[in-house]
Image 1 (cartoon, rainbow, N blue to C red):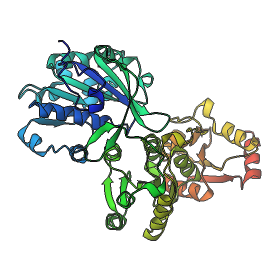
Image 2: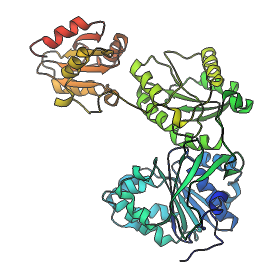
Image 3: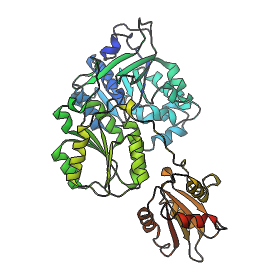
Image 4: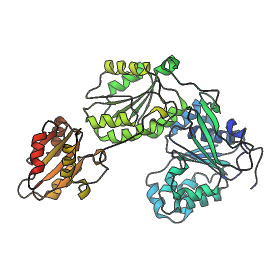
Length: 491
């Protein structure tokens, strides 16, 4: 298949600089969350629709969010979807496990190909195709993907969520070797979005970075200059527009309705849907709602939100009192404010107003994420011995806050069963640790005040463990008692 000089990406900044896509070829786009990959993908498919081609898209995002993102950049998919000219697909339950087992590309993609057999596909987007590659070892996933796409004959755009090509492992090599175009999208040193060509078809005159911006109602266009956004630069419409990412089931309906009435609310419970929203609209504030179970996930999402271009301030809210270490982790990951221990509309209103008064920040202003907490573990080990952690903390000039629990089962109760029960209520990814001794279980709760330790005990002391003996010590208040505990012969 040769180069087609009349072919177009549907993205003017690329068409002006690069030779058009190769008919039937693979084209790869790499970038972090919010970098504009989905917008580029929709413009690429819209060019196929403009040429009366049947196009298809595989995406983990909800159909509603894909349609809304397309509408935000001036593309109306309703008629194309109803006519079958635009085929929108998602990953079905259990796909990864089936894909991991099979060796036949036709078998692996049987359900996927079933959507495409009703007629030829001119253009295809897999946004993102990471799950199709990462689910298989030793590059087999990439090989199966290339084999399947080669049989379709569609002009294909593949997106990969990563900060750069170097962040992707060798499993992706077969895909990149088969790609005629590899673009990396990122923020440059001045805060502009840019495409960096890594591999291009033909011999373009200039292969340097291509700066661009995403304009409401239009999509990706040439950058018309950049200056740092100040709070006063934000329009009244943007200041009223809030993205609420609800990672917990516990947000009161009254609060959600208050947000809806007080602001132009964009609400989602899926973190995947948040990034297309950020690419499609400018928001005054992003609000992330978490609970105790979703704090760790929220911190991960925050670290991704922080990397989006010219991001708005981020407010984390939680109806429960959480540990100081959780709040610190959220602020370190990119949050601008954190409210916990009860939510009230009046306080929320003032906190949001304060965030809107501040100057906006962008990804390069956020501090590098450093986490001094112990690495995650699923239980005890010699390297994560609870008493060794306590000794190290007490020897430090600036000992962190933590709680130590010593749990002793009743006579006849199984020690390992108690340890397993306790471990189910711990947050290992946030630094909690557990060690099993001959006559007791030691539990280290990272960043836990005495009140947090007592609530932890309430969750642990249920039948048949409600009469388990327990000693609780919290640093630094109980420093002298803790020194006695670690000096004991069985410590």
